[in-house]
Image 1: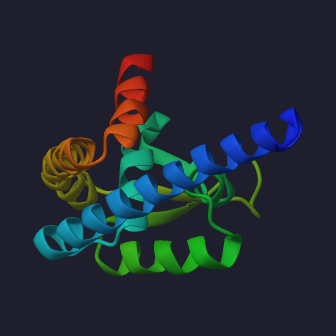
Image 2 (image 1 turned 180 degrees about the vertical axis):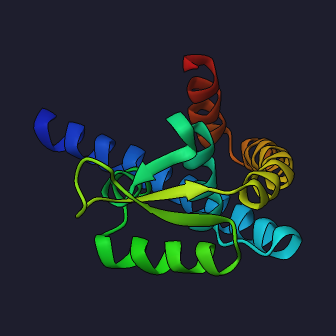
Length: 148
């Protein structure tokens, strides 16, 4: 019989693995639908969402990287793609010339608005479908929804 510490570690690992599996399933579905319907990668969509929520529709590059969980190099490539599509533009920080902001454009705001409806519907559908097929994961989804 496993010790209480091993049993707790095993339970924690099982719960964590279930969360990771749920995350991977939902992310895959969201990525496919956002790309297919709106021509955006999931990180690009989320960058537009964070910018849309930010004061003055702008974030420092490092803030955006932190919110997205990306390193500086990856967020630079992502912002370059958004700039090329005219969804964002760069702006220098007036107080610190080394600081660079990414600013949401009107085109970016519009693309985000269009995609956000699709994102919300696809997220709800994915969670509902997964919950129906797996009662243990359904409990996690219900708990997460109830916590908000």
